Amino acid sequence: MEKVAAAPTTGQAQNSNSATTSPTTALVVDNKTSTPINLSVSEPRAVDAALRGGHYVRYVSDPASGIWRTAGDGIREHVSPFAIVGIEPGRGEAAEIEVVLRGTADERHYEGGLDQIATLLWRAGQRYGCRAERKTLYWALFEFCGLARRQAAARAVQV
Image (cartoon, rainbow, N blue to C red; front, side, top):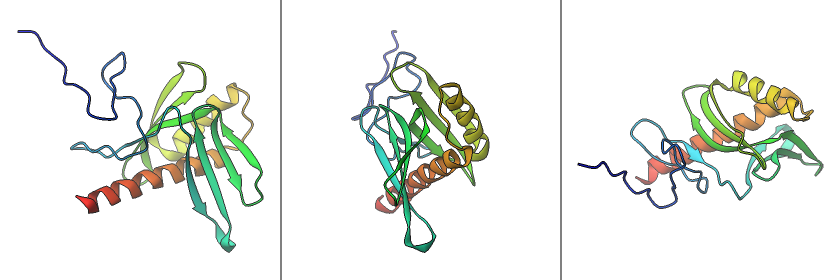
């Protein structure tokens, strides 16, 4: 009997290795063990973070140009040439993060603590000429993981 793969659900498409799904629109994807979020491979996704003194910072993961940071002064700072396409937050600061380099097939999967992931992704970005500070990239990843956790919690409340 021939094995037939199940058809992807709405918003998912299988890639060539058929082990993972392509990113969708930043919705929480539920399975029995985790609740990752997948970000669009064509649309930018932003997350705002409140700072002391009533200020804020916005992090944007843009598939066309990587991760950017904009503070209250309106100046954009390039944080990484890699754009986030998937996040699966774990316990504490553990996470799995998938990124892609704009205009290439360079996809990377990082797993572990956010500090370790930030260091590895920062080094990869430096090889492509990005001069952002590592701590800025860490805080961007921290805020996107927070977004994933909030979406998972909201999803759990709705169910």
